[in-house]
Length: 349
Ligand code: SF4
Image (tube, rainbow, N blue to C red; front, side, top):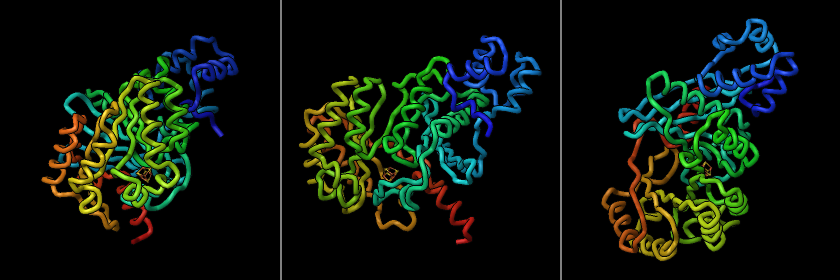
């Protein structure tokens, strides 16, 4: 097995360089090529002596992922399906905004949380991604945008998987993101989305990082939420909302509550009032999300007028609420859909 350089901390790269009998400054050069100059091969690392490049070729690799499929929406949203070394696949989405692109990153192959409206959860859980596999998605997007003269501005851990269910890899990934010798990106530009794993939210709060937390709420009460999200039976709103308050206290960051509006399920005006009463006085933002219909699932998007009326009610309580722009509707941009389509094609369905 070759050593994956994307999996190494700067100290581990330094140790590798020492083992290879090279001077210490070579570690800085390798890190610079890999993380800042966007090198995708050792051959590109032109200030390393040929002998070192050969040693690296023999013993190490840069764990980039193979691109299996790409889709581009009329609104500029791009979806990429990557193959992992064991044949599994993951999706990454690039979302174009005026201020710069945002990348939506996956943290698991499949998901065990079983949210009823989610394409990612449909095939079930297969395995956790490693921190290096999570980072490989980011570096692919960063390098692609760099070649286009664009910048990766923000990142959301909102693709397939529950990041807090893959705690060790997610934390190692975030350490690499904020490390000045590696991705060197402020956690203020990163949003971690969770379905509400309360003990992990509290553990994340203890880190005190300026990381944005988005919590998938999707319901104004436990009855509806438990129907949509099985995790609510373990961590109902009485536990989840105080944990989110704790996150705000410890990090100084407001929490974003995500709310997908599903026709006839959670989109009535009475639901808006119920939600507003629960969130009133909390330091938060509510992101109302028009649902992207998922083939094979029963749910339908709420009519636009209902979404607007729902938002209006929340605002009347002084709650900061916005309606998310629907992006990538023509390319199956709801997470998991491209992966499911490709899997079905491979099966001949
Ligand atoms: S919404 Fe998120 S947590 Fe829920 S099943 Fe989908 S990927 Fe998993």
